[in-house]
Length: 435
Image (cartoon, rainbow, N blue to C red):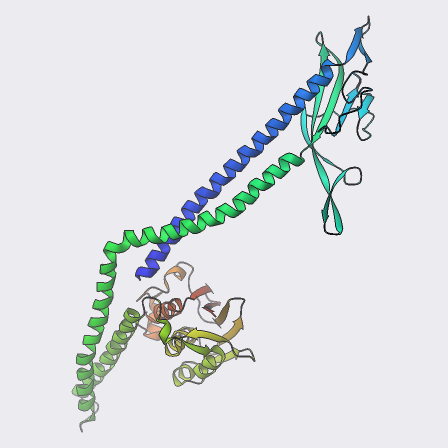
């Protein structure tokens, strides 16, 4: 119980701190993207202003017409520098007609759009080649484009359009993501370990209470066995005495025997819950074949008696399915689930048990065509002494501990039990046991 509570505290601590960490990482990455993009836009704007300032034009009566682009960088006669970061530069007339350009062939007419745009240059026109050994792959090139209207005396004399590759920005962001991909999982692991330690420190004062409660349950259950055994033996001896079996004394003795047997069963189950509230000792574990265990369970007298009026079938693999478990406890856990399915299946119905192998766990499924469980009761059916309704209680006369014991045994083996049900249609239990 203490370990289970500590595990829950660690899980919620890790979940909350991990969510904060992921949100913080997302905000940092978003801000870095915005900063990088702003830096590219600022540099692109400065270059565009330099080119625009170098354009020579003369004033006419009709309009302002550029007459000389020879001295303009990239657009003029001067060869572009070898290390230029500009992918293309274009000059459009005020009417939007192409006049001069540097780089790949542009459209003849200016396409109106935002001042800054992120474009993808088509693979068939321009691409980045990345070599991996002897193979060469091509990826679309991401560009950042500026369309700058050039004004003179509040009149537009043309449009300057430039673009620069986003490769340096993408590489920087890729390295940032790689850093997050490495540091975030490590940090989550550290958070988990810290949570485990802090939960242990926080729960240390109540650890003794858990131990005392567990010890009290075990001691009380053990001490009750002796007087119950005495009462049961004396009542059974009284029943063996000669006399009228219809007499009132004989009937009272039968009631005493029935009540004592019920109490004895309750005490035994409480003692079992107290002894196995935490993980099992590895020294008690054995290699168990679930295939053989289920076959033996189906042939046992209690299951055969419970399934007399219904159809009980099994789907088992041909090969053994091995798990590390305590055989007797695991036998009881599966028997409790199977008995529960048989009890709540009406006469003429069916119960199916199947075994399958997963990647890391073995799965035992017990499905029935019984009366089902209301959705409001599903979260509580594994609680001790919980009964869904009076109808189910009268039909079985159970103590409400069978499923609680089954869940505790399975969890002590490192597994878990899952349930799904529809009222009036049946119930399906799935038992997961790690290899």
